[in-house]
Length: 108
Image (cartoon, rainbow, N blue to C red; front, side, top):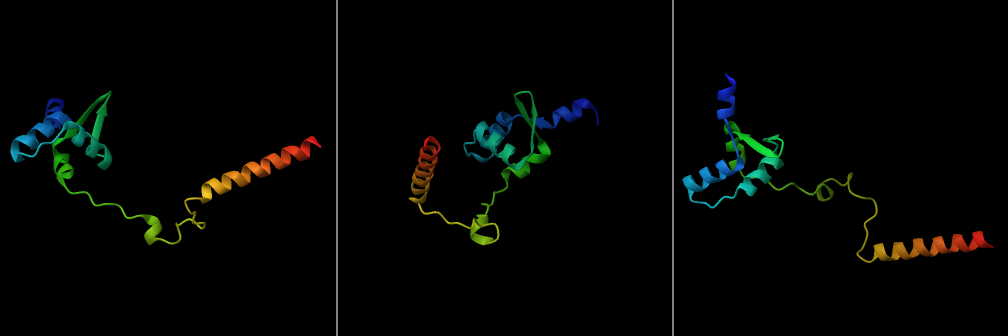
């Protein structure tokens, strides 16, 4: 394989989006291709330019599965303290009160 053959196998996100739009009729933007290529790890970046191999295009077209929330399915990785929405403010107020109390004790 020569260097020229290797470069012929690389496409920009714009070219991929244009080919998908032309073949399927679905409006695809280069930004969508760029985001998914980064997310699934098939992007090759040279400077500020991104190139994607022709062999990686089928991976771009596969449907992504949503990741499960680890806290819902793995009780070991779940946090030990479950905070209620108002707990953060209450904890902040307690910390401020404690800090003020220690400052007053230092002054005395």
